[in-house]
Image (cartoon, rainbow, N blue to C red):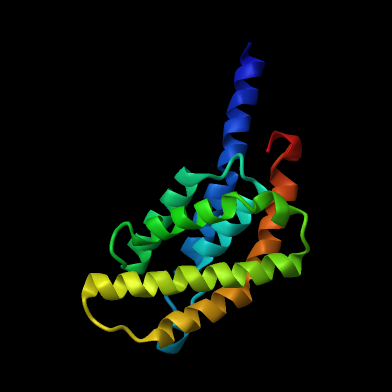
Length: 176
């Protein structure tokens, strides 16, 4: 009997690895930099992680994980509470339907689709921030964030692939 509880605890811990790794990456990328110019060139690691994990581990990475990541991004990014959470929940909803088709596509196709989805999410964030503050915000910072996010996608995705192969059991594709 204790062996079964140990297996259940291990399975529970394995299911939390994508969320914990995503939070760790967010902490690392929000570390203060000495240069003001580099602060504008921060990739949105939360969007990358939610997109990657939702496509590849749909059963263990869902709305709850995206919501937690969004709240952490709101706290660290000093954005209105719930804005990033709303956008990441929207990202989960967008990537749910085509995920089975994107799983079998090449990395470059996933990256291209990520670029389009990321652009839509960033522009929606820009619009919502302008509505919230009732002030026109420069599109320059959003575009720099967009380009850095798209450029960092291969690095973060490769790191997530390594983590999935090393620490997570293989996912049964038939369950989707």
